[in-house]
Figure 1: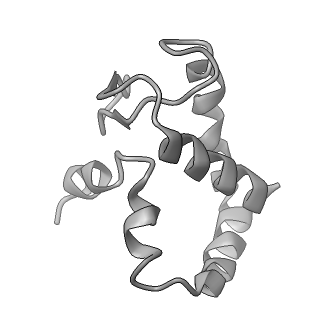
Figure 2: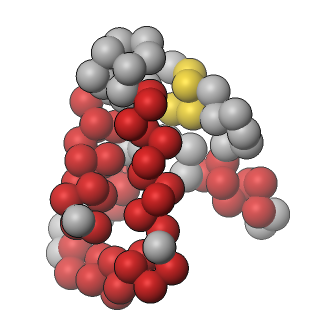
Length: 93
């Protein structure tokens, strides 16, 4: 899988929800969160702040292009996209 293909796999903010029913034990996130902290990866969530003021104000679009400028696509307000970003922000704060 190329880097572009892997980025496309994660273009939907709701991807984690696919795995939760299969593996509801999310304790595996602790390892990933340690890596996030070490690499400063939390800054990846910073782009959502500006997006909250676009399209449906205060919400997050369903999907985004995998390449810059990461154009939002799909519906303009997707609950699970908001939920995943909030969950990631809470876990990395």
